[in-house]
Length: 358
Image 1: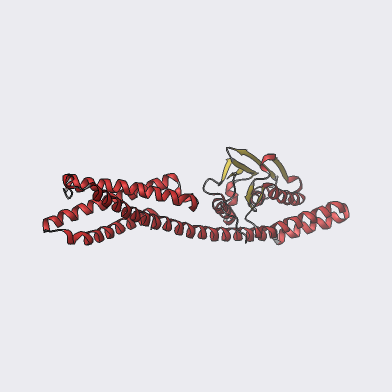
Image 2: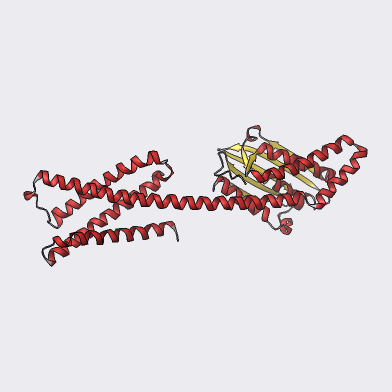
C-alpha cells in the first residue's frame, strides 16, 4: 500500500474516532434532540477543521523537509507549530459556536471565565495535535528505518553478487592459463617483464579480495586495477588491443563503486575487441562537471555482440550505483557508431548514501 494511501486511511480513521469520542463526551449536555443534532453537526465541523489543519501541517512538513532534521531542532518547531495551529483551530471553532450555531452569546460572556475556558480548549487542542505529530513522525521514522534496512541488505546482496561475478571472471581458467603461458614465455625472453606480469596478476586478485570489505573505493584505486588488467590483456592480444586513457587529475579522489569500471572495461574487451580479428581500442575518460563525476568507457565493437552476456554484471552495477549514490547516479550503454559502443556513468560528488562493511 502506498504511503499516501496509508496517510489518508490513518487521517480519516483517527479523526472519525476523535469525532465520536468528542460527541459522546458532550452529548449529556444537550437539553433536547434538536440541540443534540446541532451540537453533533458543530463538533463534526470542528473536527473537520482539525483534519484540515493537520493536512496543511503534513504538506508543510513535506515541503520544508522537517523529517530530515535532527530531533533536538525538530521538537521545539513541532511544539510551537502545534500551539499555533491549536489557537487557529479554537478561533475557527469559536466562530462556529458564536455566529453559526449560537451556542455562545457574546452579551452573556464573563471575560475571565471565557478566557479561562479558551485557554483550556487551546491546551487540549495542542495536546491532540502533539499526539498527532508524535504518531505522524513516529510512523515516518519507523517506515524510513525499515526502508533503510531493506536498502542496506539489497546493497549488500548486490555487492556480493558483483564481487562474486568479478572474482569468477578474473579467476576464469582461460584468463589464468593465458597469464601463466605469458609468464612462461617471458621468463626466458624477458625475466623482468615476467615479474611485472606476476605482480599485476597478484594485484588484481588482491583487489578482488579487498572489494569484499568495502562498497566504494577512490577512482584512483579502481583505475590501478583497470591498468593492471589492461596490461595483462595487452600481452594476450598484442597489437590488436589499443588503450587510450584521458583521466582528469581532480577526479582521482572521487568515490566509485568497487569493480564498476573494471567490469565495463572487461566487457568491452570480451564482447568487443577480442571477437574482432583486427582487434580494437578501449578509450577511458573522466571529468568533473556540474558536481558530477562523468566516466566514459568506449570500445570497438557492436552492442549486439553482448547478446551472449547474461547482463548480470551491468544490472548489478546499475543497482549499486542507485543504492550507493541515489537516483541522480546513472549508467547507460549505447551504440555511438556502427563499430563503437560507449558506457556512460554519472556519479554525484558526495558521500555515498551508505558504506556497509561486509
